[in-house]
Length: 314
Image (tube, rainbow, N blue to C red; front, side):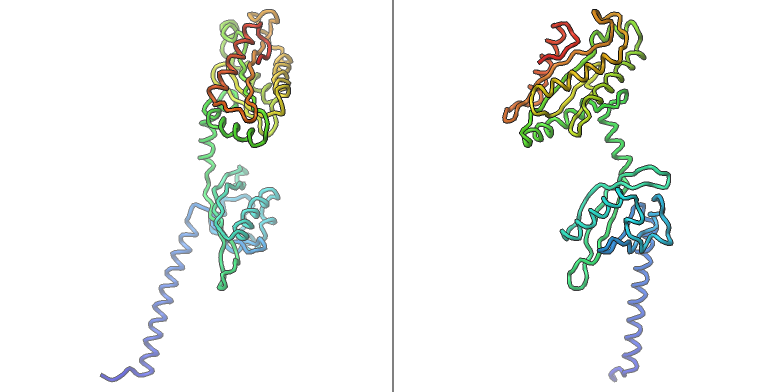
């Protein structure tokens, strides 16, 4: 058999290249179809923060313009507080040369704020240098809302007993790390059954909402946690420099409740809605579990009731 001529070899090479080109075009069409139809946000940015690619799903975002989005800087596309969080995570991925997983928030066209779970990772050049970052983001707003609803009391908007149980150990460790005292404050409405019997349950709900507002007003620092445990019982969990600071905050709640001046004729001697509170303290270095601290606060609340109500006891 004669050896292939140079012309035959060239034809075979051209045919091979055409097949490879067809395969690349097919892969490009598949890749583009994925980008166009994926219900997630996929984008890339250069190291200056300019968007170099964004898939069609970005149409869902507020202010998106297909003609100008790619090529624009992230700080020109989003409000400053949004842009800063997005770019901060891009920088981390590039500088640390690893995938970064964070939750990010952006506005949709209907002006609602959505939460996305985003993975950002570096893209490399031929010399293994980072040349860009890629972001893949999934909308988890409904999931987060469902999680929040599961730990939120519907009537008062405070967190519920389930969330209290979830957060106690974390707050205990935080107080220990910061060398601060952890306070557990239990509160309930004095003679609440009698109030409901006399004024009706709708008015009773109004009282519970007022108590929640008073608690939120007094405990409004970043680490303060407030809960409706059940019925007319509430709990507060917060750290402080000492016991007196805790008691001062508890008294602020009582003062705010008194200022509401809600009539309760079956609650002598004031004739107004009042609260009783029991405080228990976990000092740095003291080993005490959740149940034990709760029992101490409950005993203090019991003492407040038997000492005449409308007071804070320890």
